[in-house]
Image (tube, rainbow, N blue to C red; front, side, top):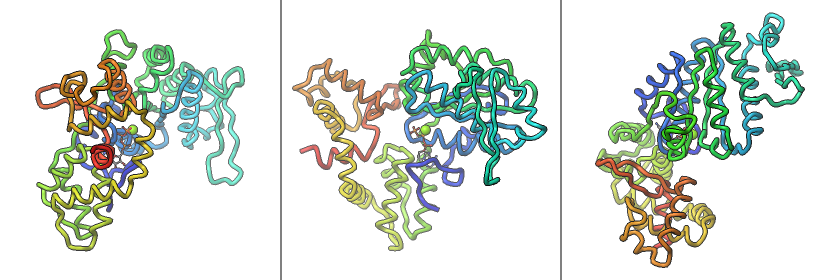
Length: 388
Ligand SMILES: Nc1ncnc2c1ncn2[C@@H]1O[C@H](COP(=O)(O)OP(=O)(O)OP(=O)(O)O)[C@@H](O)[C@H]1O
Ligand SMILES: [Mg+2]
C-alpha cells in the first residue's frame, strides 16, 4: 500500500467516492448520458475508466464494449474521426464474440469495410481494421455511431462511450454541433459519458443556452473528499511504514495541498521517503519543512515550468502566490501589486492562465468564485524562490 500519483489509479487506491461511483454506475446501467464535473486531478478519469466502466463491462464481458476516446491533442475534424475510428476498432477487436460464427457480426456493419488479419504468434485475437466505403482508414463519427446503434439494436453488443478531455472539441469549428447531432440520432440507449480537465470550458459547452450540448445529460460532481476520509487514507499508508499523523495535522496538510488528491499523495509519498521507519509522529512544522525540502529538491522542475511563462504572466503569477486566493482580479488590492501592468493586460493574462489551468477557481462558502494557483507546489515554489 502506497501513494500513487501521475497516473490513473485503481479501486484499491481510490479514496472514498462511494456515492459518485454508485450514481455513475446507475446512470450507465440504465443507458443514460452523464457529464462528470470536477477540478483537475480529482480522479475523474480513474473513476470512469478504471473503476466504473470496468465493472460495467465485467458484468457481461462478451457483449459489453467500452469505447474510450481521449480528445487531448485533437485539432481537426479529421483527427477526431481518426481517433474515434481507432478507439472503436480497438474496443471491438478485444471481443472474442466478434470473431465467432464466421464473422457474422462484422458482415452486418454498414458503410464500413472490415478486414481482419489473424495474429501470427497466436497470442492475441489479431488485427481488426475498419475502413470506409472509399477504402480510407478513417470513418466519420456518423458512421461509427450508426454502427454502434445497429449492433446494439441487433442485441449483438451493448456499448458505453467515454469522451475524455472533451473541452478540446472547442478547437474544432462545428465539431460540437456535428457530434451533438450524431448522438441525438441514436435510436438505442447507448450511454455516453463526457468529462475533461478544464472546468470553465466544459461549463461553456454545457451551460450556455445556445451551445449544442446545452443541458445535455445528467451531472455528477466530483468534489472535495471529506477531511476525515482522506485522513484515514493517509493514516493507513503511513502506519504501514511506521509513521503517525493526527487529524489536526492531516487537515493542515490537506489544506496546504488545496485538498487536491494528487498533490496530497505526492507530498505524502515524499514524507514517507524522508521519515519512514522512524516511529515518528508528523507535526505541522514537519509538513512545512518537508514541503520546503521537496520544493528545493525539485526546484529545476518548477524553474522549467516557470520559464514557460512570459514576463508579464510571471508577474501575475507572483501576485497570485502572494494571496491565498483572489476574488476580484481587476480589484484595487490585486492590481496594486501589478502597478506596471494595465487592467486590460491583467485581464487578458488572467484569462490565458485560466485557460491553461494554471489558475482555477473554487466556490466559497457564500457562493462566490475565488481564484488561486492550481498547483500547490508551483505556489510554494514561487513563495520560496520568486518573492523577495
Ligand atoms: N479519490 C482519490 N483517492 C486517491 N487518489 C486520488 C483520488 N482522486 C485522484 N487521486 C489522485 O489523482 C491522480 C490523478 O487521477 P486522474 O487522472 O484520474 O484524475 P483526473 O480528475 O482525471 O485528472 P485531470 O483533471 O488531469 O484529467 C491519481 O494519480 C491520484 O494520485
Ligand atoms: Mg482526466
